[in-house]
Amino acid sequence: MKTSSLGSSSRALSSLPRCRTCRPGFFRPLQRQKRSFQRDSKQAVPDFAFAFDIDGVLVRSAKPIPHASTTLQFLQRNSIPFILLTNGGGKHESERVKDLSEKLSLSLDTSMFVQSHTPFAELVHGEKGLRNKCIMVVGGEGGKCREVAEKYGFTNVVTPGDIYAAHPEISPFSRPFKESYYGTFARPLPKPINASSPEDSLKIDAVFVYNDPRDWGLDLQVIMDVMLSHQGIMGTYSSKNGDPSLPNSGYLQDGQPPLYFSNPDLLWAADYHLSRLGQGGFRAAVEGVWQALTSSKNHPTPELYKEIIGKPYKLTYEFAEKQLLRHRDELFHEKAPPLRKVYMVGDNPESDIRGANSYESPHKVEWVSLLTRTGVYQDRPGQRPNWEPRAIVDDVKAAVQYALKDSNWHESLD
Ligand code: G3P
Ligand code: MG
Image (cartoon, rainbow, N blue to C red; front, side, top):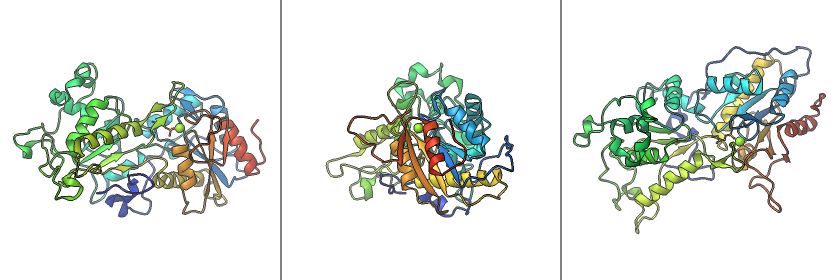
C-alpha cells in the first residue's frame, strides 16, 4: 500500500482496496435518529444549502461562538438545510450531536453530521472487512475512541493504553499516567507481547488514529513498533528494514498493517487565543521520528505509507454531499428542486476552503467557500489565505447573510 495523491504525500481513503470495491452508497449514514423538526409545507424550497465547520465557526472548544445558535435557528425556521462537517471527533456521532444540540439550543441529528472518523465505519464490512481483525485505535480521551470503533462494528480493538498497562516497559516515560490514567480504561490484551515466540504474540492488523493522542510519547512509540515489526507482530523487528536491495530500503515490505489518520489539521481553533496543534501535528511528529529512525545516507527518505481522510480530501466532501442530499430529501420529502449550491462556512483555509474549492461535485452542485475570522484564520496586513475563499466574513452570521443575498433568498437574517 503506497501513499500518494491529493497534493500531499498521502492518499484519501477512497483509494483503499476496500473502497475500490465499495457498494454505490459507499457510506451509509449512521443510525438515524428521529427527525426532530417539522417544516411548514407552504414555505419556499431553497435550491441552496450549507455545510458548517464546527471548531472555530460554531464553537471554540466548549463555548458557542456569538450568533452561531441564532443563525442556525434561523435556517431551521426557514427550512434551509445544513450539515455540520468537522475534522473533529473522539466521540460517537450520536453523543457529539447531543452535546452540540444542547450547546447551540438546536435540534440536530446524526443525519446532519459528519466527523473525521465517520468513514472508518465502512472498513468493518465486506470480504476484506476488518470487523474481527485486531485493530489498534489511537487517540481520544481514555477508551472513548475504542467505544466509537466498537459501535461502528469492530470487535477486536486494542489501544496503546492496553499495551502499556500490560507492558509498561514499552514506554519508560509514561509511568506517571500508569494508574491515574491508563488504569481507568485499559483492558487486558487479546494476546501478550511475546518477543521469544512471535506466533503467540499480539498481532495488529490495522492502525487507526481516530482523534488527537493524549500521550504522544506512548502512541508514537507504539506506532513505530508496529510499522517496524514483522507483519504487525508486536515485539518483533523486521529483518527487511534497511535492506538497500529492497524497495523503500526494505521498510514496510514485510506485511506491516495499514496506518490511517482521520484528520489532517496541523492547527485548529481551541479556547486559547492562538491556534493549537491538531492531529496533523501528531502526524508530523510521527513522520519526523520515522525519518530519524529509517533514513540512511543511501536512502535519506524511506516513505511511511499511510492513508489520510478528513477535510480537504475529496472522499470527505463526497460523503458530506451525499449526507446533505439525503437530509434534504428527507426534509422536503423528495419534492425539492435540484440542489444548486452549497455554502461551505469554515475557519481554516487549509481544510475548509481548500476542500470546498477543490471539490468537483458529481451532482453538479457548486460549493462556495466562505472564510470566517472567528477561528484559525486571522487577517494579517498584506497577507491573503493560502486558499482564496469566495469571501472573508466576520462570523457565521455574516456568512449566512452573504449566502442569502447571493442566492436571492426572500427572508433576511438581521
Ligand atoms: O480536532 C478538531 C480540529 O481539527 C478542527 O475541527 O471542526 O474545525 O473541522 P473543525
Ligand atoms: Mg474549524
